[in-house]
Amino acid sequence: MFEIIILLRADLEVDEIAEYYESLSNGLGTKFFNEFQDYVETLISFPFFEEKYNTVRTLPLKKFPYTIHFTVDESKKTVYIYAITSNYQDPNTTRIKL
Image (cartoon, rainbow, N blue to C red):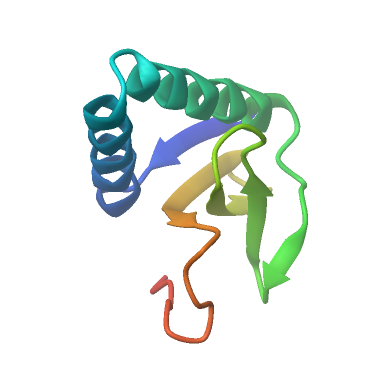
């Protein structure tokens, strides 16, 4: 089992995305948040998803066009979630600062 630490940037992004979806349709923001939480729960037991950028791993959501960006510290048994990005963003202009 791994501990999950959601950094402030990622936490704010999740809130912004949920608010955006809620503004589109009542309850949609909650659905986004619940899917995000389900994926966080998955990372507790199985955090070794695709390694995309050096040590940064990614886990795309299925129902919403967003991807979780995180690192795994195996020695500390900790997953650090750095960002939630839109799959429509240009990866060449979006940089995650570790």
